[in-house]
Length: 365
Ligand code: KG4
Ligand code: ZN
Image 1 (cartoon, rainbow, N blue to C red):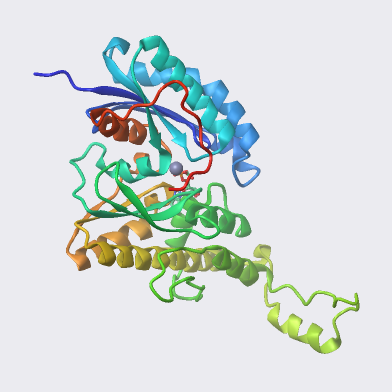
Image 2: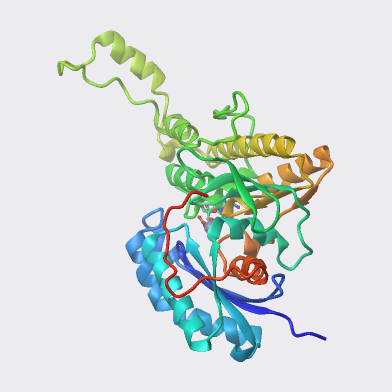
């Protein structure tokens, strides 16, 4: 029996320091993640400078832990994989330097993978191969994009967000509702007690055949629902708005402030918001699937952990008569198993990097 190909993967593109060992691109032997959620909680979002410092503190331990948990002799590891794009530059650099150092010391190839492509591969981990062509919807805190996938490495971008990412909208709306950070899991939980049809929040960019997304209008609609519509601004001459304008503004300004919302009302807002996001994602995925004529629907990224989205995508696949692949919860959010898994295909194809590899914070994906 031939020895499996073991790859050590490293991921540090945002606020998770992660390392994993994966055999033959599929079998996850270890999946270690040092989360920075507690560090960024009080800011309601990731603070890049704090994130890079925390990566420096965690990286050595997390790599050692992943190797120990996998129970594979370092001498048997065939390559080191790194997600070198896209992400926060300071964060990417920490993982990249660690990956280069290990590859150099072990004298094994360095393999570079795109973090978003790795999210689209996550559904293949611990499972059989994905059947292509597939339509992949990747939505996380930093990205919302639709791809046509013809193999793990052949990804064609069909559409993306023109403003906020879906996960970012979950995080910002949770902040408006004074729920905890990160917003996705808590809105998912709270929504179960709410009525998704009570408040008709807007679904954006549905006209025509657009495959792009926009979530900032939805976020603003939630803000206005809670705090009211801001009154008219002073005129250009600096004069205050007249009585008619003030009256109109007061009528529109029905917001009561979140402190006056009951638990049930918060749940209804959360459920209405979540339904608007899920509807939009489902409609765009259906359009992409029809355009491609897919064998499989794939979702990935932190928002792929959302229970309403998972249910909607299963239903959609059933309607379309195609397969559906969704990552296990641990592989939805940022992790290094998806990086090591995808890197196996690059290694097989001889696509390896060298020690001059750069980190690229924003790339055309
Ligand atoms: O993939 P990920 O760990 O990081 C990025 O690459 O951005 O995704 C994190 C995002 C956060 O915005 C978080 O609120 C969201 O994924 N998220 C969820 C759920 N779990 C995490 N969004 C909706 N529902 C969830 N259950
Ligand atoms: Zn991610």
